[in-house]
Length: 618
Ligand SMILES: Nc1nc2c(ncn2[C@@H]2O[C@H](COP(=O)(O)OP(=O)(O)OP(=O)(O)O)[C@@H](O)[C@H]2O)c(=O)[nH]1
Ligand SMILES: [Mg+2]
Image 1: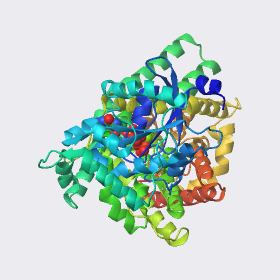
Image 2: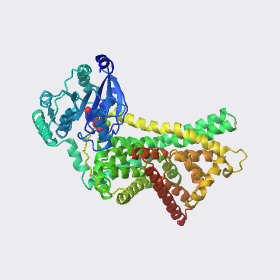
Image 3: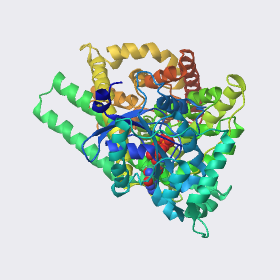
Image 4: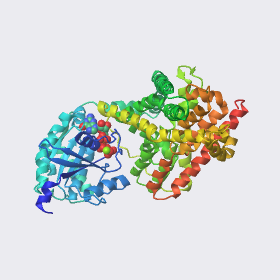
C-alpha cells in the first residue's frame, strides 16, 4: 500500500470485546448511530460501520462488532467479529487497529481476552469502559500500572457520557495519526496456552486493581431477592402482570384522542370531497384501514416502555436466569432466552439473535418456535377482539381485559415450550448448552437511549401503517368495491377470493369477511385488523365507531374467540418465513414452520369455536 493511500483514506478501527461491555453504546455515541443497546449480552449479532470526526477534523471509520468471549468464535455472531478483525469478512478490508472495550467493573473476568486479542497483530488499545460502574462498586484501577502489565495503551471511558468519552477522543487524535502512518506499535504476540494467559491476566489484575473492602455491591444485594428461587419467580410474574394491567388501564385516554382525530379527519374529508369513489377510497379505504391499527399506538408505547426499562436495567438477564431450569426441562438451550425475548417485539430480530446459540440444532429449535412469541403485530388483533368481547370489568383489583391479554401471551409461551420439547425429541436431538449468561450489573437506564428506544419502536409501528397497511387497505377497498354492480360482499372480487378459503375456514367459525381479511394479512398480521375495518366501512351504512364495536355487533362471541385463538399461532407473516429461509439456508424450514403454525392455528380456533358454541356463545 502506498503511503499516499494510507494517509487519505480514513483509519478504520474495530470495536472488539466481550458481550455487554458497551461497544454499541460507544459506537452510537461517536457516530450518531441508533443501533440497539440493552443491558444483557448478545444484543449485537452483525457488524456495522459508521464514521465520525476527531476533534481535529480527521475522519475515523468505526466497526461495531458482536461480543466475543475469546478468539475461537464458537457461535455465528462471534465468528463475524473474529472474521472482521482478521480481515476475512467478504468485501470488507481489515481494520487498521483494534479498540478493545472492557467492562471495568468486571475487569477480573475479562482481562485475559485483551491479552489474547494482541495476537491479531494489529495496533490495539484497551478502552476501560464503565468506569462509573467500577467506581460505584469500589474498584480502583491503576491505569499506568495496567499499561505496564499489558504492554499496550489503556484509556478510561464512560461511553454513555460526553465527559466520559472526552479522554478517549483526545487519545485517539494522536494514536490514530500513528496508526495512519504505520508508526503505532504493534503489540508483541501473547504466547502460551489459555491457562497461562489467564494467569498473566490475574497477575496483572493483582498489580493494577484494588477493591475498597466493603460490604456488598448494590447488584449483589438486589440479586439476593430477585434471584431467590421462589420469591424471584413471584417477582417476575408480578412484573409481567403489572405490565399488562398498565397497557390496559393507562392507554384509554390517548386511544380516545387518536380515535376522535381519525373520526375528525374522516368527517373533514367527507365535507370537502363529494360522495363517490374518491371519497370512499380515502375515508373507507385509507383512513379506516390505517386508523384501525394506529389507534393501538398508545398500548404499544406502554408495552415497550416496560420492556425497554427491564432490558436497560439489567433485569431481563435475571429473568433468563430464573426460567433457565424450566427451559432446560423442555430441552431448550439457555441462550435461547434472549432470542425469544426479542421475538416479543418482532420475530425477525429474534430469529437473527439465535445466532448466539452455538449448537446448530438448538439454534434451529429456537428459530422454529420464535414465531410463537407474541410479536407487536399481533397486538392490534388482540386489542380489537378483547375490546369487543371481553367486558371492561375487574376481577378484584385487576382489569379483566388485561388478564385475558396476559393469558394469551402465556398460551403462546406454553406452546413454544411444548413445541420445543417435541422438536427436541424429533428433529433436533443432541446435547443442549446450558445458560452461561453473565449477569450484568444493574444500571440506571440512560434516559436518552431509553426514550429513543421507545420512539424507534413507535416509529416502526407507525411506518408499517404507511408502508404495508395503507397499500393493503387500498387494495382491499378496490376488491370490495368492484365490480360496482355487486349486490353483496360475496359478489365482489374480494368476496370471490374469500369464498375460495371459506370452505376451509367455515368449520372453525370464520365468516366471509374474516376469510377475506386473512389473505392480505399474510403481509403482516395487523393487516387483518385494517382489512376488516375497510371491508366493514365499505359495506356499512350505519356501521360507525371503533372496530371493536363493529365486530361486537357482527360476530358471535364464539367466532371472536376463535379468531383470537387463531392469532396466538397465526402463520401469517411473510417476512418471518423469509428470515427463516435466510438464517437456515433452506426452504425446508420456512415451509415446515408455516405448516406447523397453520395446523396449530387451525386446531386452536376449531377447539375454541366449538367449545364456545357448546357453552351457548355461538
Ligand atoms: N453506566 C454505564 N453504562 C454503560 C456504559 N457503557 C454502556 N453502558 C450500558 O451497558 C449496557 C450494554 O451496552 P451495549 O452498548 O449494548 O453493549 P455491547 O458491548 O454492544 O453488547 P453486545 O452487543 O451484547 O455485545 C447498556 O445498558 C448501556 O446503556 C458506561 O460507560 N457506563
Ligand atoms: Mg452491541
